[in-house]
Image 1 (cartoon, one colour):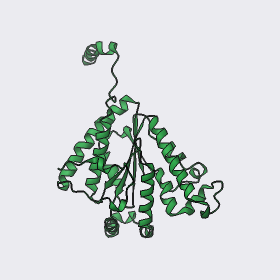
Image 2 (cartoon, rainbow, N blue to C red; image 1 turned 30 degrees about the horizontal axis):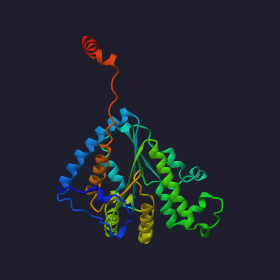
Image 3 (tube, rainbow, N blue to C red; image 1 turned 180 degrees about the horizontal axis):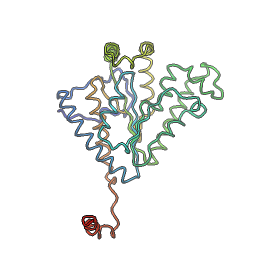
Image 4 (cartoon, rainbow, N blue to C red; image 1 turned 30 degrees about the vertical axis):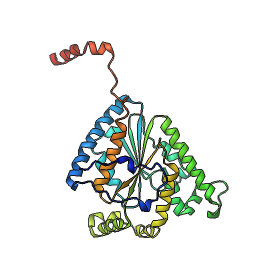
Length: 292
């Protein structure tokens, strides 16, 4: 399989999404890519065990993408080998009436991973500058002071939201959370094919909604919103990676590999040492148990 420069997928300067690839030649067949993913996720799971024992860092994985971009299956395949106690997945839906009584980040703060654990946000706090920007009428449900109609939602409003998100991520990172943000970049044609598969396969029909077709009509508007959000908020402490995702196996491998390469740099994450008195008596403890 080809060596991929993963840093080229990281947003370090303003980008245009329409110019970024939705597919990537891995120089290998699908089965080989799956094999590489299996090896990578095993190493990730081993590292997570050390993270749990070390208990000083946590990891937040944020997944965004157009409908059908493969977020659910990516979570299933990348974190398959993890100890269930070590990873918690949150899928953020339409805010509840209780959540709307708080600021827009409140429910995301509540879902942050504990030290020693991975937290996965399937759709994230960025929905507050994506779907709400495409459909600004949703902002009115937040009952914000000074916002009485969509005409009150101006450029300054969105700039303030980007600033709030940057501050949120900086605060979280300063307190020991390692942040990854992945945008699964699929083409409009690939989305069309995936929606058709949902309609053609009876066991996938439940995934389809007529609303998918309505949202597809504003594809370019969503892409512009993603582009601006990522350009405004990709920072070293919380970088965005744009993952070519027309091939699901490739996208899964790239996400896993990016995480593993970065996490292995945290050399201080190790299992804690046993107290000297425990180490001195380990053989004695073993013998006591064997004689029972």
